[in-house]
Length: 465
Image 1 (tube, rainbow, N blue to C red):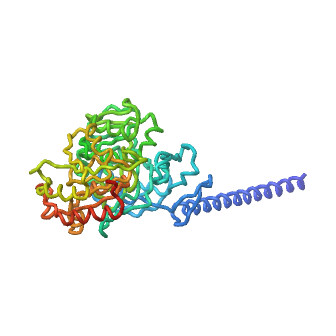
Image 2 (cartoon, rainbow, N blue to C red):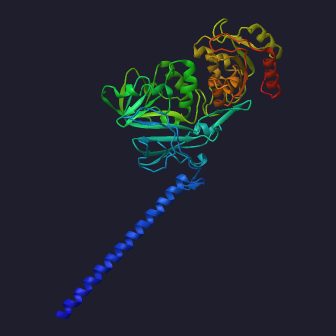
Image 3 (cartoon, one colour):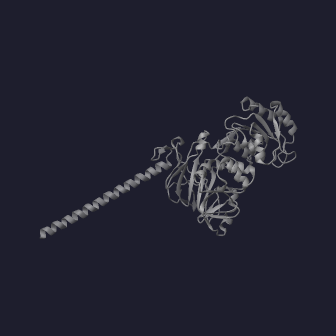
């Protein structure tokens, strides 16, 4: 009996020892697996070499947005560029600042036949851009912090004119802010803080956003197109339209989303580029509290107003044939940026373009669009009338009277909005620099510079007139 008890005791000891050894082995295997997983995550999101998802679609190199500013509610806004380490589902804090950073993109679009989604990653491709031969990058959606991001990377991030370089966006981004409040001017905040996305016109409103009265929560998703001055035609054209061009496929896919606009003009122009039903729009007339608010914007360094991603917008003109008219957009004599020597300018232009059409627009885009729908060249001084280039055919040439190069070189605001819009549409652009230029006064266009520019255009075969 004693021997039997001793045997059983030794057996229990061996069993316990074996169980402990097995536990150590399993624990070691788990730790090894976690280490391998972490190394794989680091490789996927920080390597400069190509990687692949489990579905074998190739993914270009890691990119981190460094210009998205998330402001904790207890702090004053101050621009700060941060190099953030990437952690999926984790909060990243440096000096009490948090960055909504997102890295990986983007799958070869030719391999994607339909929109795919899951609880953590959803992919959306703009098939319309594919058909136009534009960027074929894809949106990748990842969840972390109190927001999600859709990130669209742009391979071309600068444009130049006469050896002077302007920055264009690194990426087009859609940020989803949860349990969010939005003011009438478009500033979005939630319990964690206020989101300005680096926009100067929202920085002064951060304090005001903290004083928002509590609103009834709307349990639905909205996409905001509310920005400063986006109730006027020209600002809708070079601010709203570039945004809706990359966000359209997402909005059409997410049919539950309501689009916030400033007025009917903005709504109608958005519908020209993104055909969604009127019922999907809401004009924001007061502060709003919603369960989700999406905000599209461009990420980049030192972006000036109107500098949009090159070749990212399809004009509303013909995409099959070039125009054949030269259109001169006249500005009322004596007003700011009107052409003081317009008669001489017209004489010089008609030598090269005998059939040139001189027009004064009506400030009604439904009428004005017909003026440029057959244009091969659009000529005129810097001003809102230039926004009508969105109705021009493919491969239109723009000649703008603006000292673009001189202003940029001297460090002044060159107001490159139409320069940027032309590149966004894939158009050719030329600047004729007026003498003694002032944005608030009439200008004098140097005839010799104008003629040289026209000759250059004709030599390059950019005129069909």
